[in-house]
Amino acid sequence: MSESLSASLSPSTSLEGKTVLITGANRGIGRALTEEALQRGAAVVYAGTRKPFSHADPRVRPVTIDLADPDGIRAAAKGIDELDVLVNNAGIAAYDDLSDPEVLRQQLAVNVFGPLEVTNAFVPALTRSRGAIVTVSSTAGLAPLPFIPSYSISKAAVLALTQAHRALLAPSGVRVHAVLAGPVDTEMSKDFQAAKASPRSVAAAIFDGLAAGQEEIFPDPAAQQLTAAWADGASKVLERSYAELLGAS
Image (tube, rainbow, N blue to C red; front, side):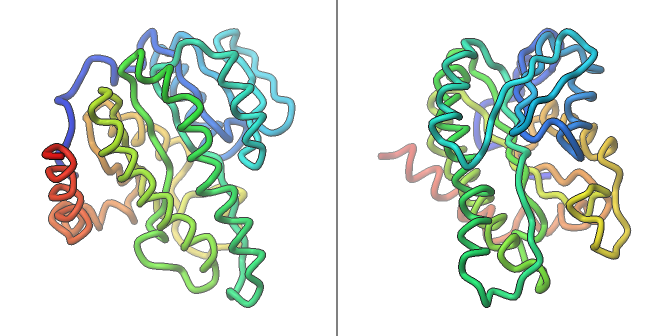
């Protein structure tokens, strides 16, 4: 795993007694993240979903967050004064061949502009808590899968967005982490024929990576094969050099 460019490991990366917001919390990785956060002692878990959602645990507080509705995102943020960890998990995927630009536009609107709007809306609360942002990208963002190119392009963009937020928010004490996930056994990937990690194991690895201060979290066996190459790869070398430039400006 890559070494941190920002502050050293802080006790706030533990979820014990913390307030967490997870988008896409009603299914797949998001549902597993919700359960994992509860198991790790989170005091409050805001479950961000587009449709009404309920949970038996009183620590879970449903909040309506539609990534395609910037005004709604900002309204939701006004109702949450305290936040320690934001997990940008929600997203969409579509099989396509780039012949219809509208598919790419939709993927970018939800998978890139959605996390951007959510992050911007909650940065004030995270700055106050000196908290953390975890944004879920994909190994498809490192090299596009030819049967989901629009999704792959959007995940490459969200990885760059995460790296940019890391540099820009470092002076505020907000730590920013990217998740580079391989195939996970969710509804979104049901038609993808490959060995898949369970959402539960991926959720646990994501929060383990957060606690360890890993800037890039590779949460499953397929993704973990890339860790050594990533640490000293061109993207990470350039990110470190660019961070130094920002610090000198």
